Length: 56
Image 1 (tube, rainbow, N blue to C red):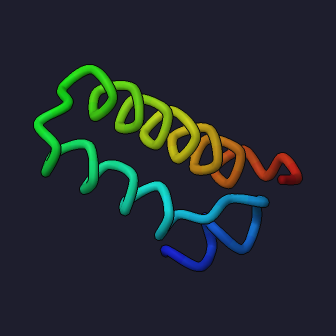
Image 2 (image 1 turned 180 degrees about the vertical axis):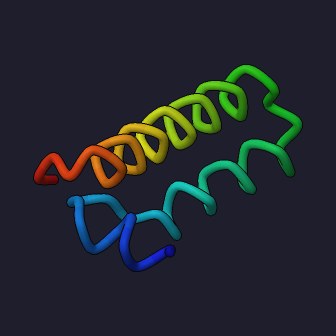
């Protein structure tokens, strides 16, 4: 699934996760929440498009 999300878009999912990790380790809750929200929103959009057959 990871490749289908990152390969179908111009996203660097691993970098998104590194950003989340960095914010969490820095105890920067605001940044962590922003990064997580963006990551989940983009992933949900990719999955919704894959369910409907809409091109990426």
